[in-house]
Amino acid sequence: MNNLAFVDIETTGSNFERDRITEVAIITLQDGKSTRFETLLDPQVFIPSGITALTGISSQLVKGQPTFEEIASELFKELDDKIFIAHNARFDYGFLKAAFKRVGIDFKPRVICTVKLSRLLFPEQKRHNLDTIIQTHGLHCEARHRAMGDADILLQFWNLCHRQFGENQMSESIAKLLKQTSLPPNIDESLVKSIPDTPGVYIFYADNNEYLYIGKSKTLKTRVISHFQNALTQRKEAKMSLRIKHIEWIETSGELGALLLESKMIKQFLPTMNIRLRRTSELCAWRLGPNQNGYWVPTLVSKKELRPGDQENLYGPFKSKREAIEVLKSLAKTHNLCEAILGLEQISNGKSCFGYQLKTCAGACIGLEKKELHNLKLTTALRKMELAIWPYEGAIAVREGGVSHLFYKWSYLGHAKDEESIHDLLDNSLPEFDLDIYKIINAFLKKTNKDDLFIFKKKVVAMHLS
Image 1: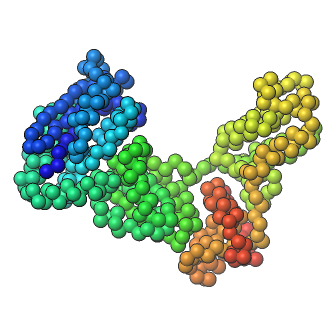
Image 2: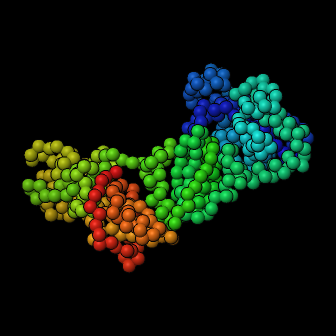
Image 3: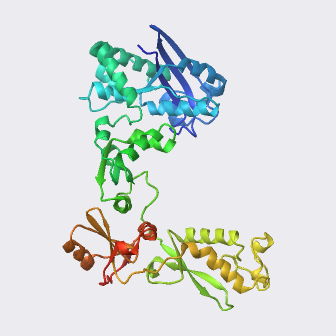
């Protein structure tokens, strides 16, 4: 039998980059002998009252205790060359790996999660948390939510599994779990194996079918597995992995279809861990035009006034007025533009702007830079974010696999599989401008030969903004 280490830790919170370990307990089974190691640790950060109420570990209790750095070498010896066994092992392993990394130790044990072991051996159980395991199997815990008390429960559960299933089946289970360490505790290997490695969108669900995360990929299975592999080193992925209860996926005709569907679904279902691609209600853009002195100046065009694809001299779009102003300020500093002329700063006649004093303005505000040069610098700075005019007479169709994606004025009309459905979309669709869809279409058309597109002469006239 392999050498085993049953591990439990207590911490100041759930973020292994910010929070710290307050207690460690290890029960080892090595060469037929059992040893125990436990210690409180001074986390050197505040212990929240909620954590103290749960564990009984307070700042006063850990005062004078060693820091992790002081016991790191001893702790590493206790765990070295042993199979690391913990409940929801990603949590304990993630914290210890991060803590060892901060002191320059590379910690990479083989890991077994007892949640997965319970799911494998007792599939009829609906829940596999530690309290359920204690109650279901009649285990005895002297100190729940303390490191040694919980580590001892793991040892009891392990011994119970050995008695009930025998050495051979336990050895098979261990071998199987050691190959599955990248999977979340609530996800079966058979489910992941059934995911096709084709283009599409995948959906991670949390408890009660809550939408947790929606993503897209050209190779669904490979991308899903990469999330779980990254969970061993990245806090966000680890947090998400612990919450995943179910996975679904939708195959698409290709990469473009996956991009478009992902954008639509994120805006529709608002998954808790998706930040990008959210719907925005403050869409806006800059429009350039000359002022009374001949300087080109930007004016903010609100969502209500935007007609993307029709208007010239538009730059953006931006998700909010705040973002638009921040981008313009950044461009002003980078290209030595005058923030007063751009309308970002108020000055008195004959006075220089604040940027001139900081040498981030070339002096256009006091006549030291010609307006022609300032205008050229401004248009050059904005060129990369110019909103292009729709380059086609009407809608276009892009063929991908067995479907046609229809677009009009940077908006997505939908997809169709036959000619009748195409004309139905052209006749009845209400194009909806969306910033993320605009970026997808624009990037796609830049690398697509015009000859590969079907251009409809018939125009779509109705338009609204997302």
